[in-house]
Amino acid sequence: MRKQNILFFLSLLSVSLAGQENITSDGAESITIEELRDHMFFLASDELEGRLTGTSGYDKAVQYGVTQFRQAGLLPMCRNEKQTLSYYQEINIDKYSPGLNTKIIVSKGLEDSTFSFEDNFIMLFGGPFEINELTGKLAFVGSGIREPDSDIVDYKNVDVTGKWAVMFENIPEYVRKTLPAEILQKYLYRPENQRLRAQNAKDADAIGLILISGHSDTANWKRMAGAYHDFYTIPGIGQPWFNTELAAVMIDSSIVEYLFSGQKYNPLDNLYALRRRGTGITRILLFHRKSCSSAG
Image 1 (cartoon, rainbow, N blue to C red):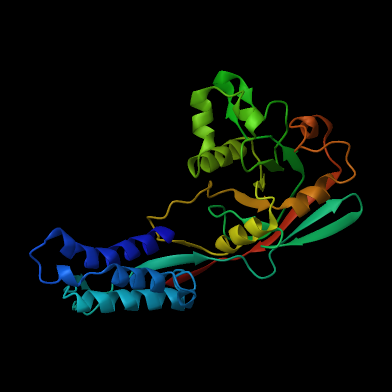
Image 2: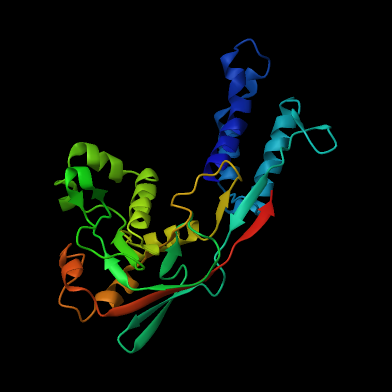
């Protein structure tokens, strides 16, 4: 989605910049810094609300671009359903949105606590988009690395079957220092490392994936949660971040603190303590994630 917006923006600027490559063009001298600045300021203005796909702000940006193309004398090249030339290319886009009642319920002893979507956790897209209820205990697997040929397996002696595999969003610095360079490279960068670690969890028969967020700052979390509220993909082209058979969520510091309050250990302080001793958490329940599809 963001790539589409960036490409649109660059194509708009190219209309103004193209003339600069041909100094004999009559329009070249009309291009000014002020004009380019006006394009940029409008496309980045609050009026367009981020130009999110399928929103009115995106439509305004598209209409603005078409106006500029016409003024620059560019001819339409896309054919619509009536087979007439148009500036608009219509494509189908799938939109996935968690339902308003999406929540996580944590059972700790005889106590249940409920955490809400976006405020306390986000969905990581690529997993199954229709979940009525998914319940399981926890199994902490550190960084989620599974490299048996190199004898580096965070899942060693950990029973993950039928449980949520809990791991760090970012591989801790002290873990990075212990990994061979070729293995570190595989697990260090997104989105490939996310897919690999999700596959590791699936291979260990986990029912889902829980990532402990590295975004401890509240403002950063809010911005990230807003960006993950909806997910758009082009059917047959879009590539999910995670294994499509595995549900995945990222939790904020409030859930982490609740999970490990009253414990004599904390996975943020001791990577392997949780795996050795277990937890008092009897279950984590993810309730209802819905999907919808729209055309754009």
